[in-house]
Length: 487
Image (cartoon, rainbow, N blue to C red):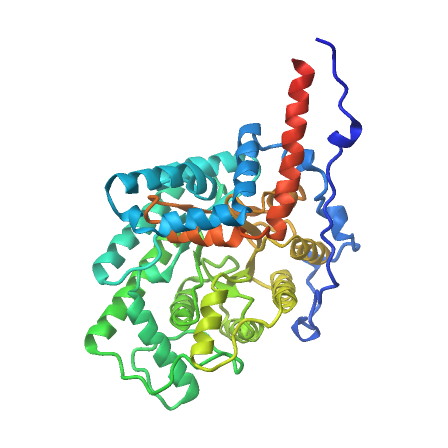
């Protein structure tokens, strides 16, 4: 068969316009006055585009198998179609999912579509194989046992065993291929108790004379700008049974921290909605005081920067930790409970705690990232920048390069969700940064809430997903044309 010539424009990587209005990369009040030590001597400034190349599909996805590339392209296209996502979400939420043959059919369909793309497997062993495959492509994995909520001590104990098993499995992985074990406090402490503790902590913030006899050493969890409307009246003290349950929850977390410390595997505590976040921060920071020593934090908290008070809380917490000599680790994210938070605030007659505009959220994330990169350069703190936003990625790369902290192991990690923002993940990895994928695993029924959030997030062409689809489309067409050449 005659050889076919592929037009050059087909083989040329597509360019994607990621420019936005200029962002405030460093807020004046967030820049430490101290100069970085000699170890992090500042190199010459280099434009972010020169470090983070995002316009060459072939280079970005060179380590990804064609099969995975094609499947990812198909799934990302499908999840961008609003009616298709709505239908899938309706099916996954339907009562049909709870009964007999229909349940089996829905489970099978979900497993072969959303689950296979956004989740790493149905158990820790399978997830570890997914991590090894990622590691071959230059990425790392965060092991996320997908259980979300517990409502009694029996469920909490069962969930703790799942997290401990995850740590055990991580020991069998190649060195540094797994970056974190991720835990949800809502899975090891009953939700109702977290709500009660959060109410009590909020009331103490309103009235400092309010005594909490069970409270242990922790770090600031509120700022003056933090919303307190959730707690309208003075709450009743914890009952003896509730105090006992709180102690059990704290022991579960400390056991998990100790197990992670023994295998030198950082533990990352996920964030939740503001109804229970004060209690989560309280328990997380108390554990950090006990386990974060030296220059490598074991316990990492999560800060959601779509909240108006995020920057103020970050400043207060890190300042208090520095005074106590506690190295801190934070994961910075934008946030995942926007509609819930706005509706709750409205029900109390209050303004939403979420930033008024998406640009304000971008600015907050970038300011907090810049602040934490300065902390990494000047001390023992660590940061995970969890973002799908290409502009934030470029700004962080430029700042890290300016400070010379880009390739300091275990101090700076970029992160994206498994199955999303692939172009950004591989672009950052190709630029020499540590990059992890957030890899949820567990039975399909268990991870359904997680899958529903991913489906919701993909509706309407998120910028990063749109970029991925464009690059993957390029790779797919290139693959097809190359096959035509050899047939």
